[in-house]
Image 1 (tube, rainbow, N blue to C red):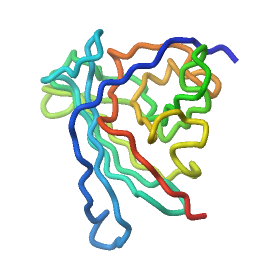
Image 2 (cartoon, rainbow, N blue to C red):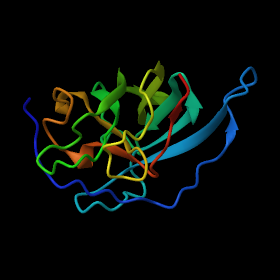
Image 3 (cartoon, rainbow, N blue to C red):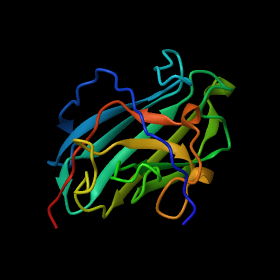
Length: 177
């Protein structure tokens, strides 16, 4: 397993999950998670790329709808780039980033809106088990949109945080299966 080792530091913005209905045909409780771009020092890029995800908080599978959009073409989230939405646990191994990570979905970004921005959409239902996992040192699960090429075998093999979107809050998911 080739994985890189770095200390993982995440800045969180004040965003409170919003309880809403998943859709008119669903009675599952869902929350909303927002994602942000960070600069090299870990600060939120105010006019940068962003994302939003509506997700189930319990069930036999983790269900979600995710969209990301660049601030402008050329920002973080360039067109025609492969991304992966991952749960990135912080386990008791400072030598490896994201050991035990779970890939929730993969997709490719594209130019939209008459060439003014870039968009990425992902919808999926994944058997993740409970999130966070027992070994995660965080109080919840950290979700991150990463470059697909940075994924290793069950961990990250590269770390380029200025190219990623970070979930603003840690989340929890209760696997009822």
